[in-house]
Length: 260
Image (cartoon, rainbow, N blue to C red; front, top):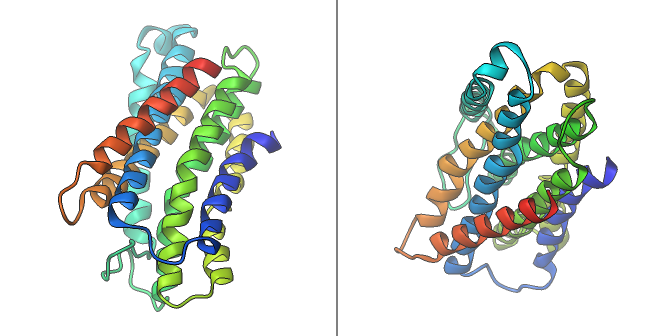
């Protein structure tokens, strides 16, 4: 379990460590391609690692869920979207390259608000890894450990560029390399934390596993549509974000199918 939960966090740590090797900010086109890559990974992970298993688990059940396999996936997905919408509306945060804070008004510094924004992104990723692992250990479940590992690796891959996208702007704002690295890495700590909490919650309410899987998918798709894709397309028009998205989607799909 520890390996599954810690791998995504290591991706964030390694990405944040780039601040020690890069002297200037990430070029806009590279940043867009990285954001697109992250969105592609998250979309593919939501479909192959979360929504499809949710539907398959329902198919193995009897009664209402066995007959209407789509119900749990659809309901959980919508609940995940609206849950993140609520959190996004309440939690004070500031997106990279933006000067307008979102959420409730607060006296937090710009640095703190930027860290909160990326931390918000990482919460559903930790939940998705946790609930997938819960599905693996659930009695009678057909989900495999390699499927959970594939999702964990995929999240780590998209966390790598995300970590650098956080730490480099902090360096440009005058933070020391050590502090920029620490704050960038800190945004990923919520992933193993929320992953562990999700495992505990899932073990108590294992009958709701299909809903929890699709809930995590909805939360991840919200982040993609609300934040990652718009940020990958803002400014001067470029196709690099779209290309990055395609590569990220294909890589995550291959990982899940090959390991799952």
